[in-house]
Length: 343
Image (cartoon, rainbow, N blue to C red; front, side, top):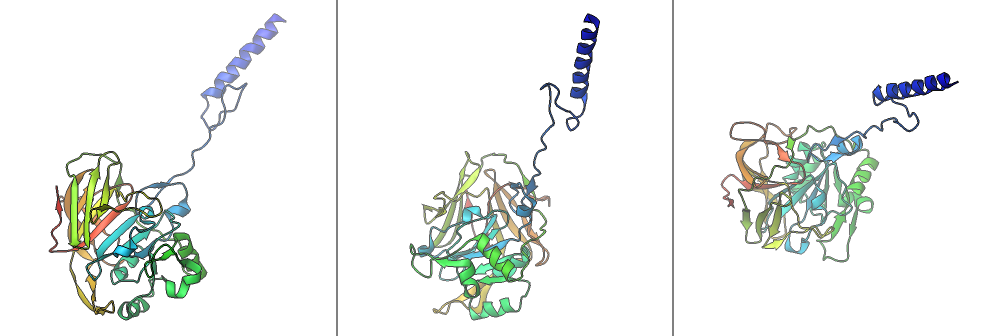
């Protein structure tokens, strides 16, 4: 009997040892010794900000370009911190406008939403995006009508489905939307709401402080500054000397990357307001000078976009792609003769 018991014990230990030597997907629980491994959920990278998202659906959402007001009465704006890329450029009346690109992340409130500008005719095709705006001048509206590849989810046509006015701001600076509402309206209108975009180049943070401040003074009403914050490895944004906050989160906007992109620009023949001001036209195809600020440093390079169907890429002086830090990027569109400063 003792021999039988010893043999059984030795056999059990040998079997347990065998199961632990098997691959993790083959292992089976034996008296609590081991168990099946739990596979990690797949991860996907957002093509426009490099962040990791846990669903393929989030990584392949069709981007939305929202035209966001930046007049003094419109500040602080809502939702910009949730964007992947935010473009800022001079409009008219010595103020700028934002074109905020939302791809992988949802924003429950975005705005104030204002009328489309000529720059949207460049940016929307670049990202295969939907356009969210509140009307447009006759000239811009005519051009949008001639550009069927731009699905225009305009407030005038989709107000009840995608827009609302708030009571805490003065009109016309109180029109808000959300990314989910824009996509639902677009889907209901028969537009595609997914897109396969090529990814920009990204890397992990590597702080190496050398630049503390960036100044992009468009005008007396649009004096933009960034201050490098080493703790977060980001650029704290200021407008008119005041912290530029997201009205929804209450947090100061702090992009991981700031790009100053120098492009040919000129006044167009399109009248944009009752005062007779003409809209600005920007050439965003071709190539030109670019300053890329990341990790507390500046890279003096170039931007390149061969045609309207391409996404702009950035290269250093050796013509190597510049890898951006994962997260929000602000792109300051300026004329080729513009003089920014940094120290």
